[in-house]
Length: 226
Image 1 (tube, rainbow, N blue to C red):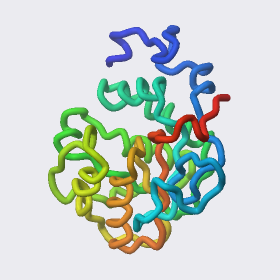
Image 2: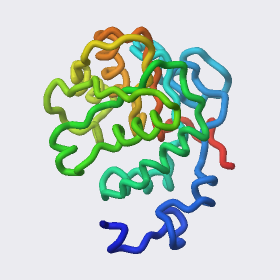
Image 3: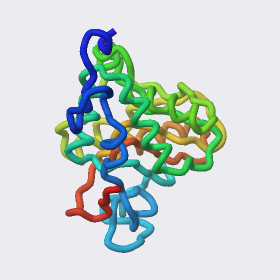
Image 4: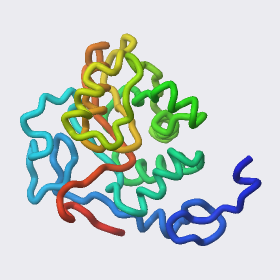
């Protein structure tokens, strides 16, 4: 209904017709090797564990993202998550499928929303992204994860606070096999790790994380444009 009432304009360049035009979609920044083999952070040379994830016991086997969380991507994610532009979820899935090979897996799962935030938004971006990717990759999408209780939003929290905030924040129904855990943005990996740990406790043999965007801490490492 919103699309009928308001004209569509590309959120990146402002041209009319669509919320993300084909040219801007193709020009979105990308993450280029070398990347950390474990968490997907850009690195100066190939490494198995980087400074960002080294020394941490991570429940996921790998994490990969389609785009760095830069200015244009921030505008897209904000419109998608906070302003109800649901059609951007399909566009995000298309970018992920175009740039990332599907990890070997039996099914997809997604990081569940806090009940209050889901009620406020009316939908859940991570679930939408997972279901779109499941259709593209022809895999089932499982609603297996649940929040263990209310939690503070991760935005604005320091790294240690993020980890404490979600450490035991998820439960999983029984699962088997290898799973792809989907979320919209990878920031510190705290949420992905806690959700992956719940899936492993539920019986998953392996969990690989896929997100649309990823926060980058290095100065320009691994960033490229098409």
